[in-house]
Amino acid sequence: MKKTWLLGFGFFSISITWALYNAFVPFFLDSFLTSTAMIGFMMTIDNYFALFLQPWIGNRSDKTSTRFGRRMPYLLVGMPLAALFVILIPLHTSFVTLVLFMVLMNLAMSVYRSPTIALMPDITPEAQRTKANGIINFMGGIGGIIAFGAGSVLYGANPSFPFIAAAAITLISMLILYRNVKESRDSVVPFEAETKRIKLRGELDRTTVMLLAAIFFWFVSYQGVEALFTLYGKHHLGLKENAASFSLTFFSLFFVLFALPSGWLGSRIGKKKMIMIGVCGLFAVFAAMPLIQSVVLLRVMLAIGGIFWACININSYPFVVSTGAERSIGTRTGLYYLASSLAALSSPPLLGLVIDQFGYVSLFVCAAGGMLLALLFLLLVRHDGNAVRAGAQAADSAAR
Image 1 (cartoon, rainbow, N blue to C red):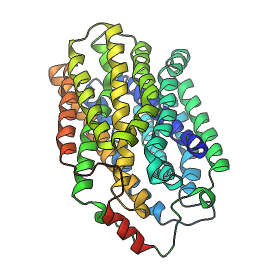
Image 2 (image 1 turned 90 degrees about the vertical axis):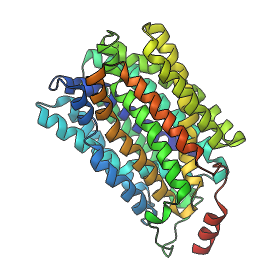
Image 3 (image 1 turned 180 degrees about the horizontal axis):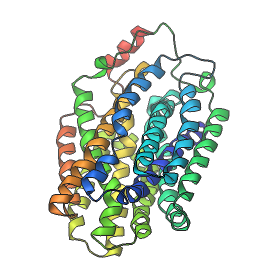
Image 4 (image 1 turned 45 degrees about the horizontal axis):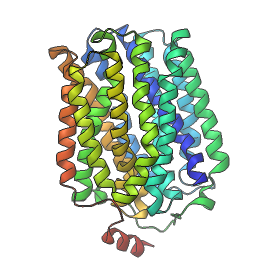
């Protein structure tokens, strides 16, 4: 598991960058736009590019063969570019330059996000992947805590400081991965140039489609709340900007505390059961939020929500990978991020539009509805996520 902890630095850098982006970029946009729906839309316009790039790059990385490996080249290109553009975001001089830097940063992150995550199943046997995903998400959760906690302090000192710190962490993480993870030595899924061509469409069987639909709807809820919560805290609860972002620290903290137990429980009782517990629990949390006016109680509910989000998020990616063949890990990683990117680009503007019409209290009403839809599609998935399907194993064996 030592390699998994080292690999976690990749997810750590991704998580800290996204957390800072979602927490503070809406404040930059708020200086130019008066509509919450437009702010939500601008927070997702970059995802239209990521939507097509991540599945394609994930599929492409399955077929890449270089002396650096099949995933590492994408990290070596994407991470330095992402570091550059994340620094430029708070240095914008106009609405046009702000949007330009946002798009370029997210394009750069799309280059390496799927290959970074695909490295985990590449170097981890199937039976240990849920635990390994708990480890890398633990690292990602630490990134979220740092982003919302220390990031709030840095933002108060100077709005550019959190973004400079995120860029430095990205570059350091890249060096750690490059020096310690050697694909030719560590991979349990060796690349073979003659492997049968992997097609995205061929991976979309009924089980995968239902699972991706469930993923889409729980990310609609999560992404919408994450992107608009700081505005909810500022305009609905009357919190200061840094206090609103600091409140999200409680969600991230308890996500981190439950990341490893969630992975262990997913291996013991099944990924699907743990996800269902998480979806039901987070539905209850979101449904209760409109009734809460106390900051203390708000943060308690966010902490409980972090626990249930761990049940979902720790087990969902290994679930997607387990329903396919070993040779298609990068492709299925891309499909996973396709579903989450669709949610990321549709949720904030739609929820922002609802907020414009009905007020900020509607944010959590819609989020609770998204969790109910996720539960419906999850109930239609007939795979428990504990083992690769026999058919997929046979196909994989035949391909090898």
